[in-house]
Figure: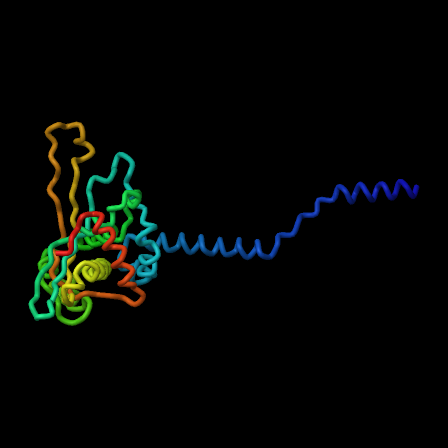
Length: 272
């Protein structure tokens, strides 16, 4: 009887299916992953909110913009029936004051051409200049005609883009959300253009103004690709005036200059 009892207890013990306890570190990692995933989904939803008033007035739209752009924007358009049909570029030039007081305008430089001079950088085309051109063109297109005329004028008074913002609202305050989005896009582009200006023309004198232009250069439409008489649609570009140079804390001008000049030399873009 004793042997039978021992055997019975042993079989019961061997047949036990106690669930292993999850280590504390694994619980922490799983919890952090859930929080990060939830935050990503929330900011993605905010970024795609259809209403500008809701996005920026109620929801943290500015935070979502900073999180999503430029690397999480899902607009590659590499598949039919709506593949990309436009080459998007950002052009930059500077207004330079020489040591003798003379002010000269530099030639335009295609910053996107410079950034894409390395073959490996053409894969996803999410370079800063390409993203900037896309944002600027979209925001510019949403402005009214009167506001576009104002944007084409020079706004060199004061710092940053406050003068431009006030002038746009004075011309037409019925679409304040569009103005706000345009200023955000122009901030991005102007800051990038300032770095390009310092990289390419800083040795010529003081950078007193920059001018940027988003250029859309279409190719033959996908639907017309088999038509031997098809012609490329005309190019489009943003018509913007001169604005003050802009730099932000944390930007490394020297590092940008080293990298951009190396790309420019490879792309065949001179300092003129």
